[in-house]
Length: 423
Ligand code: PFF
Image (cartoon, rainbow, N blue to C red; front, side, top):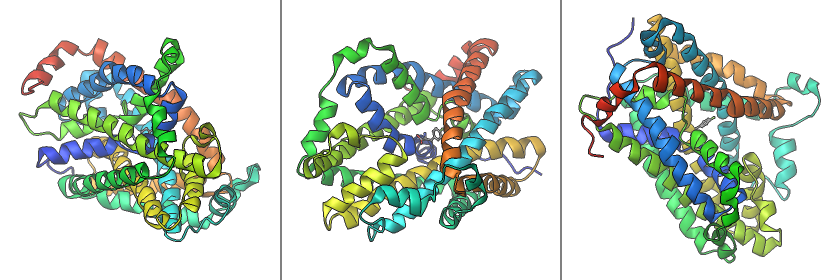
């Protein structure tokens, strides 16, 4: 049997859970590279435009729909039209598959949390990551070799996610977000503050202050801004819809959406100042050109940053763990959000209680994630990521836009949004 409908017990629980869902790997290691390769300071213009045009607008649609129907995405689409229910399951399937590899990356990070206390990656972090962490092979037979340390860390992340998601909403996601998010902010402020004191920091942060205005005429720059907003705000993944369905009557939807969108973007811009400053320090001390250091994703976090910590001296024993713990906290709050929409839809559709649903979903998820804990895991992960993020996710966003903007009477939602909002 399903339990009674969950409801957030405070506004801060909802807002922090929403910010937690948005702030993730995308903010920490994707954004600095997107910012740098798309004109530096001038990127802020398309970026801010895309926050308003796409980011806030899409979150508002998800909030309005979730709040109005107070149901899972599967039930909402079924209610609008029976024919639309498969779209919900397609979206949830994409979200679930994304979660299976996202958990793996958070698992790699967990390994680096442990290594960072002793700089356990040694003198050559590049080789260490490929050979000692991933045991990466190019051959297809790599799929038959399990990498035990990655498997264990993936298991731990799935276990943590299960432990949080199976609990009642406020005792699980609510409480964890209220603890991890403030801690994450304190750690990021400490890292950025420290990074600004490093010699060479200005080589890095001036990149954000130096605009390349010609980039504004480039359509790809605008596309990159919209892509970053989709990724960073976790649009189209039914997260905002799910979380908004748990809001009590009288909630200020528009105000909440604006707070969440700007907190998420504020976080990534602020965090980039720290990342750029640290990379500026590396350029000064090692002579490696800045543009070669601003890589994206795991290369930045698990290769470039360990290299930086190797040159940093004793402070790296504090900044290193803080950096990897930040990624861990940001990753966990995103994983639990990704899972919540999937679990809610399944438990509502099949009348299975929250705890059982979370258990089944996490066990199946863990089984799929084991593919990424093989010698060919990182290659497969790249393929999954490329297809799901560049194609499937954008397709899901498009479908949702069409459904809620076109098929469903959007004007009705405006009333819902404005009812109690100050903005
Ligand atoms: N918004 C989060 C991040 O930036 O990492 C969560 C997320 C976004 C997860 C997109 C997965 C994804 F494909």
